[in-house]
Image (cartoon, rainbow over all chains, first blue to last red; front, side, top):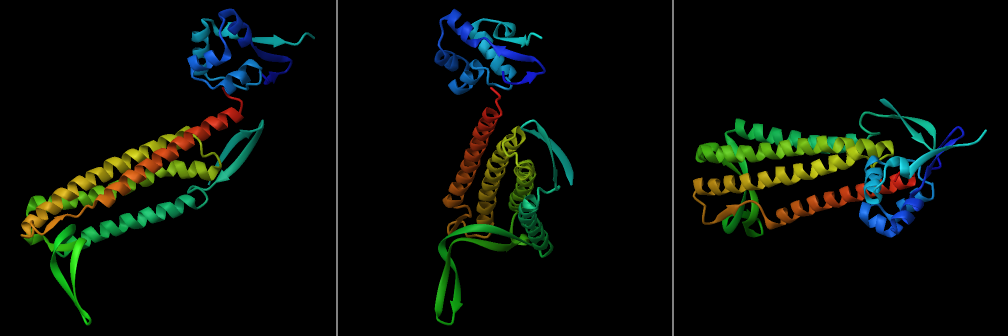
Length: 77
Length: 209
């Protein structure tokens, strides 16, 4: 995610989860009823915020937890 | 005036808004307010003069108007001012209910429009509040005018019975008015969906998924 707080940023691991589940972004888009463009924004770490409803739908479709999808990376000082 | 602040591109932008949305709400409120005031005045004035106005559709030429050049017959939908003594109690009740329904529907529509106009005036039209208000406006119009139509048909039919012109006059509601009602409700639903799409587009621009 582009929003950075100091030296930390939120990273989305959607591409990794999609590969593990053998699902394409298009299939995920249909499953969670979120546009392909928005999922692409999420996948490429360009999203600024995510709705709980979107987070829950994606986690349900990929059978994962929010912590699997999003992690915080801190810059090494 | 009310001070509102919102974040635009990370900056806090404070804008002052007038209570009636920079005048737009005032104009709409004025139009609806004048209609409501006129309707109430018309109803009270009529009752004070022991008469009540009612719409009737004249199917046969019942009344003629004499002009210097000749005579013309009154046909179609017209508004009659009938004396209350010539009408039955239930007829007067129905006619008063129809007028009151129209007045309250106009007031409810004005109240429903306030958040829409305020948000448009603030520059953020696609809010959940405005979208919900448009939905409420649809229901007020559909329900209120639907009830008005039903009660007016009953009242004007009873009035034509009381006045002894049941065969020559019908209810003063035309199919054109029904189409107008459907068109208005459909138009507002279209606008509500546009606002929803606009909200979606705005969220997309803001980077919210």
